[in-house]
Length: 157
Image (cartoon, rainbow, N blue to C red; front, side, top):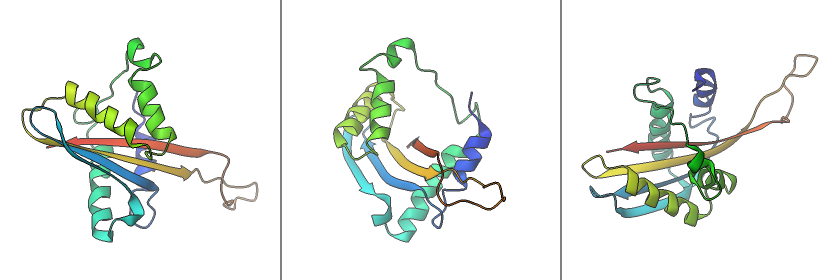
């Protein structure tokens, strides 16, 4: 089940000032699902207007109406087996989206399965952030013991 509180916590970090996004990657597809072009760049290398524009795309995913625009897709047992989609997504996340071979394979699978009837694009956002922790004295401590790592995928015309 999609945890709305976790998603709202994540949106607080999707501002230019507090951004925890480290990389952005994407692909442009033609109507038949073939990749027309790809990109993969460190998020901080984008200009400030480009960062704001891309963060708004990521926020749109998180603010979508649950079960209407934002859907939870359960991965089948077959997708969770070694060599399946789950392993691919885990590899993309673990390498911090720095290995283009993983993202290219993801785009290939996506192009085979998704056919909206016109040209479309896929944007992937990867980020990490420390979960803030308060000490016994109620003061915020530097760093934390838990690091939250995430992928956000936006597919749009």
